[in-house]
Image (cartoon, rainbow, N blue to C red; front, side, top):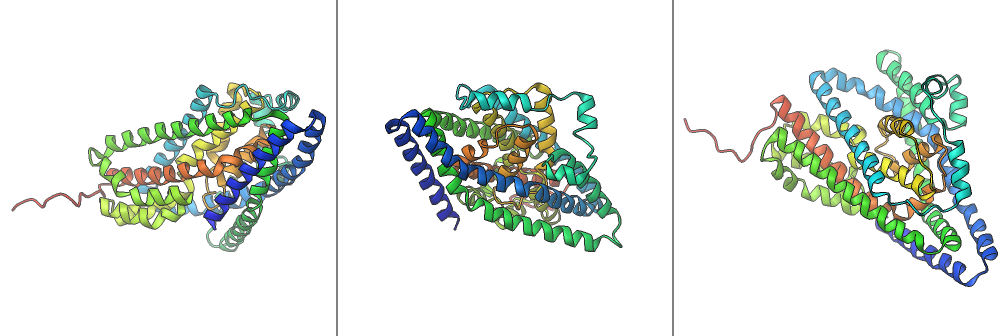
Length: 415
């Protein structure tokens, strides 16, 4: 199914480029614009469907994830060390994405519609500390916040609810079960919506090339190349941290996880590599106790590749439309993505959903989602493999801190 879906995406890209180019070359500008407007209806419907699922999905996944964090707290010291590593790695991953996209500027010079850019820039929140605290932090009505897809108030409310659920064990299990059921339902709905993405990719590419020509292809090349360059930098930092804490054996870990890493890359699913990764970590010397705790927790809270993609793709979309975000807005984005990216590992195309929520918050053109969907499958392969590497490094480092990292290759000392 995954290979078929990838094939559909590729065919949609090719067909979209061909139809858009034909309209751009053989039709009058007014006719091409009319065709583009009609095709954009498909894109608009797809984007509205994504917006429809954001609020309940974020609420359900965050509440369930935070409620289950009581398990980590019960473990105590190991849980604290694990979360410290996850938070540090998340900040580094998000920051690399932000810095690299600002340095490489893959979308600059490709302003698709200056009118859209001007409107979006005017609508983007001009944040002051007072406005941020009084308007965008605590919701006066959670129903209103969900109706308007105001992601940060939803996150704050979800944190309160999740913490409360975790603190009252004797009464909360039915509530937690309900939230988990809602989460499962929304994941299924998300899968249904994402199944229409090949059609959205075709419509978005055909529409944009019909009015702007083939120049957008160069922006895609810079986007994909820049992202994989950024992933390479993240891998170097992860390996350096592993060498720092584990020593020269760090390179053996990368060799040990090569098979699950390649599986994640080929299937675009880090979850598919979970069993192999767990087995490889234990063979490397990570105790079963630590590996069985850190690895599953990492699949919700430590998706390094996916988090880096969120900042990279969001700012790429802003660049495509010629929109500049202030330093305060970028810092706010880091904090927002730090929270919204947690607990959504099981969501198909999870990064797309998180990016859609971020675009909505900053009033950036939502049509950018359809544009990055055209190449998302190729990028998903790289970030899925990176998620496996990041969680493997986290498991090895925590095991080293706990004295739970053995060396299977070491020869027993002579009596």
